Image (spheres, rainbow, N blue to C red):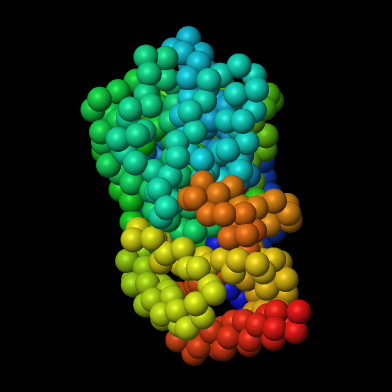
Length: 382
Ligand code: PLP
């Protein structure tokens, strides 16, 4: 099987698997315990926090460990909205956010908050000016993802953050960094970003681990009640093996960022050039796209059926995002980009790893070609 679904989950680094197993076996002490074993676990936790903070270019006190980016995004959006209700009840996000952000805003809207969902252009990008124009006196929070998980479109979060903090410093800025980190350089320093979410399993780290960067001075209402762990923002005994494994994966992701981006960009270019051979495929590759995602639609063809044709030939890809691919609805992201229903129902996502070769891409293209031929034959027979 050839795996082309790295935006959904990545195979972990062998070193990370080893580290997680070692820490799990040897360092089972609870960091809240006052004895030696507890202190050892506490030191591992502190070290992991420092490593993550250094990779992100923030202070270690600004890192909150979570169970993954879904939790980080929930904590960021609901935590900020609830904490700062005194500032107002208006929130802003985009029409193309990941469900873990989108659903928070939908829920808050039902509970009485006023939410502006920013549109995107045909390439899937928001306008910085539209976002700034949407800010009102009572705006509390703005969430914009860095890289879209379906199309790979990069959002102008650096420019937006700089201008937002200059023009409206009191508006809190949240960025879901899951698909960008390690592939699309973004400096958090002086970025205007107050809250930034990451997930370890997208970066060859363990599943069930993530973090939220919370800028110093900002308060959030925690999602859960319990002990005082993670500065009371995320109560519950810390998952030390996963956190230590995640810190290693985040460090490696940051260190190899530019080299990885160059390798991926070359593979992506080869794939997009190859896809041009079939005019029935609509490739969504805007100007600003992340190097690891190629997304296309095959109008008239159900995405799931096409996915299974590729799977029969040994190639694993995605329809929409992994989190929403089991829902049979057309893609909200493609509809927001102006796609018709047939196009929005037939999106296929191929996501690459720097370990793929040009030979892998050629084989994948050959399998896509065979699938397209099969569909053409089937349509001809009807
Ligand atoms: N945000 C984006 C952009 C994602 O792609 C994902 C996962 O697909 C998430 C958030 C959720 O991450 P997790 O699986 O760690 O909850």
